[in-house]
Image (cartoon, rainbow, N blue to C red):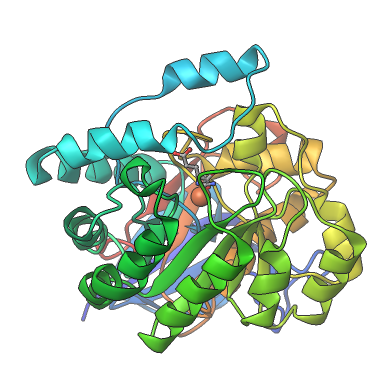
Length: 398
Ligand code: NIG
Ligand code: FE
């Protein structure tokens, strides 16, 4: 296989805490004037440019910074339709309660595969153009056997990180028979979806009449675990609730939102930091005019955190990790280095992956380049499109 050496890297963020000769003061494993050798989609070598081994071809990065590609560990990209008017209403003070999900379910069910597939492709391309090299994609706008399964089949064309979210909300046709819907999700729907999914997720939220209770969520997660899926939870988004407790109890890989947390929730997450990651989605708070989660409190308590977009038509129709990073620093008390770590190695951990989110020999060559000399410019020049995924071997991030 052809090897490529990337040179002219003014600053390299490796996130490799063991890299010799790197600046480890911010846990970013920073090298200046660095080179990377890539072969067969993997990193073969990382180090100072002056010591780079020979390779078949050479690519100049032009004095720019290179970082691990962003890992967007929470998105809902398989949808049709538009809810921009809900956004407008929320900006005048209307509260989000999950009710609008039904609007997207109707539009998604009505879309043909030929309509849905290019919508997802365009969203994934939009993410890559902003530096994201891995994306997790959930179903959750089909909410019947056929449309959930096809949502996951389409998602699997773009990523191996696919998540079955049949338990997104109780669809209106089951509003009077919730337990029948839970039976469907954990029975026939799970059987049809599990072959296309790595994860199962549930929206556990007592503050939404549409979402699932703690007991219902436990049933859904247990069934998913029995079917061989890893566990993720939407929890503590709209108010205090059982999501975090349940996620920790069931050793879920991630509990996402974590906007409203008691001291006990934080203690539980800290004690479970090797197992369960708290994934923060500040684009949602931006788009729903809600208070931001306190990321500083979580990090100071020893909680493992991740940052992701939650890109979806209702609560955050933004595919931009750089936007999320800017919010995390400006509104949530993180330093730029902490925010970048959360959107790379942190979100990789929430997917139980150690081959992405880091640049070290043997990891995937999922790289992003910045049109800037330092990662700090991602924050310092917020809103400027500086980051894009590098395509070393023409491979797509999966
Ligand atoms: O993560 N909270 C539940 N699900 C999505 C919103 C989905 C929608 O409103 O369409 C979320 O915020
Ligand atoms: Fe979500």
